[in-house]
Length: 420
Image (cartoon, rainbow, N blue to C red; front, side):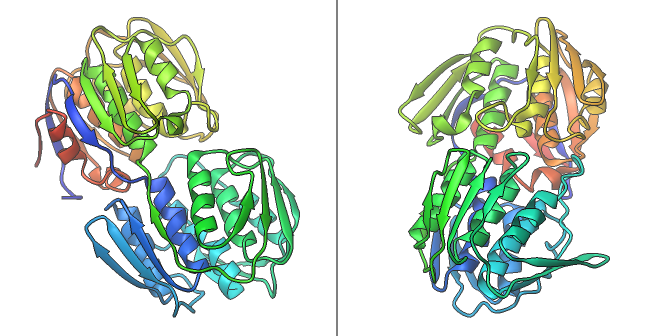
C-alpha cells in the first residue's frame, strides 16, 4: 500500500483506544547496537516500518541472521564479519550513520554510503566524525562512501557543541568496547538515549549518566546477546494526541511512558485539552471539548523541550486555533515543507526562514495534498481528518517510514479512511 494515496472524508472525530506501536527512534539504534555483541538477541514490540526493514537488511548484509515473528525479532550476530554496508536501505536512511559506531567498535573498519532520509535539512555528520576521531578513528571521504578504520578505539573526553541525538548514539556505541573510559559532555538526554543505554547494559556494557548531559562509559572487552522490549513511540503518540485536539476527540493511548513526552502534556493543556495520565505508561486519556487555543510563541528544542518531530502536526492544530501563534524551528531548517500544503487546505500561515506565523481559522477544507517528509505527512493526515470535505494525501511512502499502520490506527480511533 506504500505507493497509494490515503483518502479521508472529514470532518471526523478521533475517539477510541489504541496500543501505540514500538518506537522507530529507539528500534533503529538498538538494532545497530546488536552488532556490538556476539550472540542471539530477542527484541519485542519492534515496529513493522520501512526504516526497520532497511536496517534489518543491512544487518543481514553484515552477516547477521534475522527472523521475525509478529513484532518479535530474533537476531543472531555471531557470524557478522562484513564491514561494508550495502543494500536497498543503505544511504536512504539517516539512521545508517548509527552503524559507524557499532561496526567500528566490533570490526575496526567500516564503509557506508553517505546517509539520506527525509528532506528536512542538512543534518551534517561532522559532530559524529569529530567525536569518533577523538576515540581513535580515521576517516576517508570518497565520492559517495564514507570509510573509517581504527586499530583500537580508546577512551576520550568528548565535548559536543550541540546535544545531537545521532552523535550521542554513535559515540555511545563506539565507546562501549573502547579501551579505557569515555566521558561525553553535552550529550542528548532524549528517552531514546536512555533506552539505548539500558539495552547496552543488558549486553554487558558499563554506562552511567544516561538521561543527563554527561555520559560516562567504561569500555569492556566483549558484549553478549540480550532480550529487550522496545517502548511505545512517543512521536506517534504525540501525533494522535494532537489529532484528538484538532478533531475535538476523546482518545485513550495505552502503554505510553508519560515521562517520554517531555513538555507535550503542558502544551496540550494550554491548547485546552483535558488530560488524564494513569501511572507512567498505563494510560493517557485526552478529551477536547472546544476549539484549540493559540500559542503566542513556542520553539522546538532538545528533550525535554518541544520535539521538532511534532512541530508539523502542532502547526496543523494551530491552523484551526482561536488566535495568532508563532512557531520557531531551532533544530532542522527545512521543517516547514508542510506549510504550502496546509495553505492549500485553507490555513493562514506566513513563513520565514525559521519562523511560522499562524492565524487560526475556524476550519480547514479538504483537498489533494502531498507529503514531502515523514512527520509532515502525518500532520497532513491529521489535518485531513479535521477538514471539511474530501482530502487525498499522496507521498505515503514517507509516512510508512515511521508509522506502521496509520490507516489501521485511525480506524481503531473511529476514523473512516481508504486507499485509492
